[in-house]
Length: 119
Image 1 (cartoon, rainbow, N blue to C red):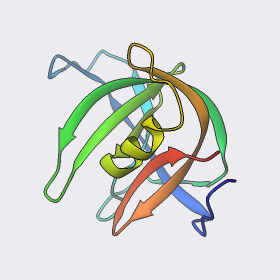
Image 2: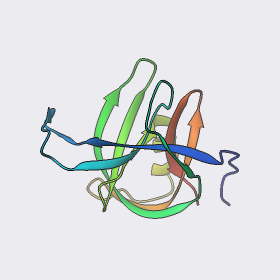
Image 3: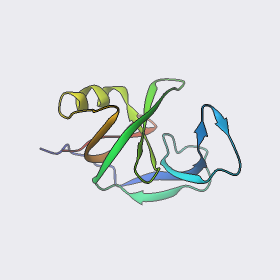
């Protein structure tokens, strides 16, 4: 049974990828679900609809209030993932060498956005 979610739009942005902590201007930009939409210009608000994707665990990032896991899909789009959502997901799907396939939806916890397993 899919989770109920009243979030109708979610913020996306673009940025250059960091590899080993290094950012190069000549690297192409990637799309990402913004983990926080406050104080940001250039937000692309998109409808929040469930989507199917194969995601690869990319990194762990510490914020001011929480840790986030970042997953990347096959097109390079980056998605933040809350720790609680990750523990719930691991009981339902197989994470094989950091890769997982499923149906996802964006969620909001406080002022922060992320994704979680939908069904």
